[in-house]
Length: 282
Length: 282
Image (cartoon, rainbow over all chains, first blue to last red; front, side, top):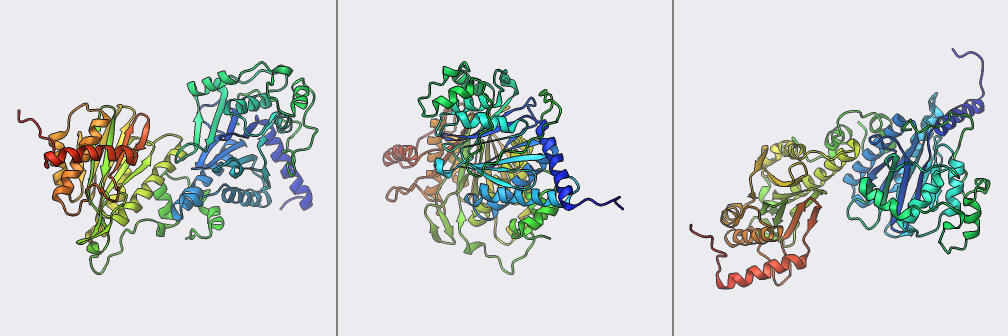
């Protein structure tokens, strides 16, 4: 018999606060479009416990939060995709279907369970052309955000999304996209995570059969060698129209105050989680 | 038992709480058993003669890999039911299977087997061992024994590149399962006795992939020469055998241009010597 009364609003608020704090403790993950598909980048000291994964031929998955919780979502998603692909046809498995499945399960758990899941998930699907690409960001309460071009989640997600928004351009090369992602993941003036602590994968629309490819070892190092430019304000050789805002952004002005594109409300963050020292794979 | 049509409800109990093995087949058999190849229904009369049959598949190893080829004919009794049927299937990046016997059952097996391998790979984060793949296929064949007794016999030939040994491996099966690992080469199907005789004379240890592709084309031609259910290359309709090569770079299917090159070369030689190349006596 519970002692006293708590209003439904209060219960929901408490659950949401709890989940936000849990998520904010981890590091950020970045997902963004590049010319040949979709790039996933996550600082992750673990080599075996992945934050980024393949779900199906054209569908990738990235998550932050509690490992055991998003791992369960990942496995459920693979079962969903494989059974539907086998029942119908491989082309009938869509990112939207998977996002809806996750949303309904996340929403149900958020309302019905004492504790909501402390996870945030991105489901990304690569299309035949860049217009067919889709990035869905799902939060712990089952909300779905149809992101355009890029998404960031995890600890400091707001700041990361702000840096990402400043630098993101359409149809970047893979090396440029990786550069943008790493800059977004690094605090201004901070040090970039070493190669050994990076988890990088792509959904490359030009690959045959299964588009998902994990970039590791020599391949990743070669790619990073193409990207690493000095992060000085003038370094962006891109002649894009947004160069002025880019230069000021790289100089260290506080991003994140600008609102996201259309329906992009900033991902939830908690102010008072412990400092992430990178030792946790979450 | 939840039906696969009401996924979200079923997911609550099953998709997210299945903590058993990483086998797709085992998952489906508890989740939606009607999707699996039939196991124990007994037909009133054998219908084996009334459904299309696939015939000859040949496979051989070469230096650093394995190669598989299949003709394109499907027969129902004495009728040619299809001239361009596919009997060699890529099952993952480093394996393929060919089917002989009841075409429909064989195609279903190939589809299921591909999902089985990918499902394991995604869930476990590692590729299944070659022996593991061969054993999974054996279990599927064993499950079909009751149907085989009714005339719906399907026998696969499985070929894979083994990265630990840097060589190709070939496994064959009987209706009750297997697997039997084959040294150097093997053939299955009604034309296999002729193909195997041909391969025995033409096989050379340490051949290149190019030479071995030619050897397999010769063997398929010899099978078609003596077995009415095996189709030769259809020069007028430009329907060529399917040839799949697997080496350290993965599976690739030779293009029609490549195969027609081999076929043209062979046919030209056969105009002079209809029985094909002559192996040295001593």
